[in-house]
Amino acid sequence: MAYHTGVHSKRSADAVEGLLNALYTNRRDYEYIKQNYKQLAGALAYQAAKRKITADPEKTADVMEKAFEKTFKIIDKLLPEVNEKNLEILGRAIHKHTNDPFVVLRNAGIDIEPELEEFRQFLAEINGKKIEAQKTKSPAVKGAVEPKEETPETIKLESQKLLGILSGLKFADYSERAVEKALRELGAEVEKLLEERNLELLGVYSTVFLLLERGEFENAEEFLKGLNS
Image 1 (cartoon, helix red, strand yellow):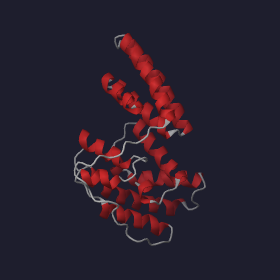
Image 2 (cartoon, one colour):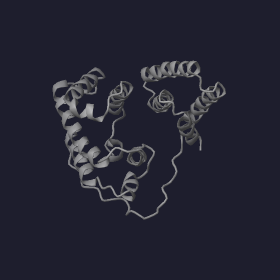
Image 3 (tube, one colour):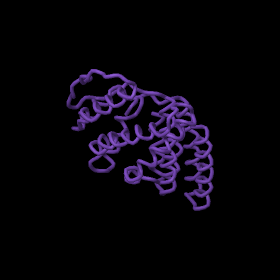
């Protein structure tokens, strides 16, 4: 969400995303994060100091605790109920290539602007600044069509590669041995991408790995074809 507030640091975001990807890989859910956010704040503070982003881990941990608390307010309003529809709306809204996430949310009847404004002010105060409240960019338009986002070429190429793996599995009639082999290969690639901090491709490979692990082969194929459309 920080990306869409206009107050965004790639170095800091990489540290946060690295932690969240580790939690995802270990099947830790949102409730786990809410219950353990103080420990996670300490882990982020350690990473920030290690990367020389900050010099005071204790102060950074305190700031991160507050950031978690304010973020929870936004997420709880975005996802009052976790279901496929709400997750799809949230995914489109917070995607970094979405020009105006508020259009996506308002068209779905969700208003998080008071909570997001509080978050923006919090980020500004960290930098020693106060900022004017931002007006909404545009009113919701019933039935408005949101612009289609461009998929990066690297993701298109990798999705074609993954579609080839799925074709091989289909040819093998999704045998247990073939699926296990594919999962081993994908798992190794996920570990490699995690080490390289290639977050875009990590998201693609992690999603396909999870869908194959669940046996949702058609969903995996639809997901990858969607990246190529």
